Length: 470
Image (cartoon, rainbow, N blue to C red; front, side):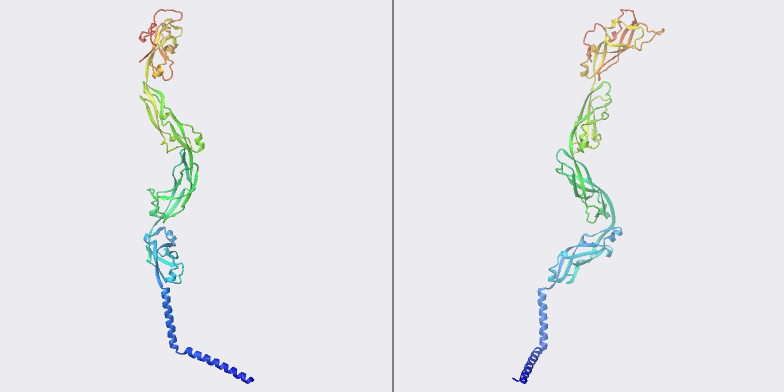
């Protein structure tokens, strides 16, 4: 093949290719208007399909909490505020593609009010979504404004009171209670703060036999003991560590006496009844171990002038040693003390003159020997049980002769004289005034003159019973 022939063939192939391209372009550009219309219809068809598959819709999200921003501007003005109940939540409507709405939840919707925008008693509500904000066509709250309740800001502090609940086992009692911080400070709307009557914490001691330490919430209560709504309050402490000691309980006896003297003719038997006779006490172990009984002072029961049993109610709470306390679940601390007072019995004792020791006998004088066998009658008074054991023959005493008058010579004239008889009687027995007559004579003289004592019934012949009960 010749080189000229080769070149000619190649040129022919190129020309054929160019011709084919020109033919394709002619076909592609042929009827151009119809093709443009077809393309437009296809696009509209696509939009229609898309609108069916992922349409734009609106969706409402209810009860979205309204959050407050810049609340401190109100506090700086000395004001407290809260959103009205009807403004604490809001319904929010979102407009977006269905595919976007399907991905949203209430947690993505935020509603806020900015207190710097407060206008009277209302503030605008702003809403937004934390997701797809660039694909949301519209988002609006159901109402444009939130209503605000405004009042003066109040501050107060309260001492925290500890209260125990439940019951400890038998033989134990709740002792001292305490809190780590005993004051809580509160600020907020004056109407709410002023309704708080006390701050309290409660410790459950059920079944406990040893000291308790626990964290417990602080309760703010009104005067009826009901909880105060603390939603709008700022509180320095929400909970505090509280403790309660658990002490043992022991039973100890009570002792009592009395003071004073009953009315004439009456006597105290010495018997004292105590009701109750024991008391249950509790306290820390050291104080409790050294307390074995309680003694009521005798001054608490005064029987002066009494003509019968005398009683007094005594509160023994103040008589307990430091660190020891009544178990209030078993006793109110009131003890009734009664002293027995009875009318005195009387008896007549026949006491021999020989049992009486002369006192104040004038110098140089003696008592006649004939007095040795005479008897003196003395009335004594006391409890019948005490009188029953007395025997006049064994009773001793004194005969007081110190009051005998002197004659003009400064001496005592021999003769019959009276002296006061004082018997040595056991405790609780008294005697009436008794006088005995004796015959005084000069020392060394003798006389057979009988003693003048007939008015007392004294005689050597009296040999009957030596006590006579009146």
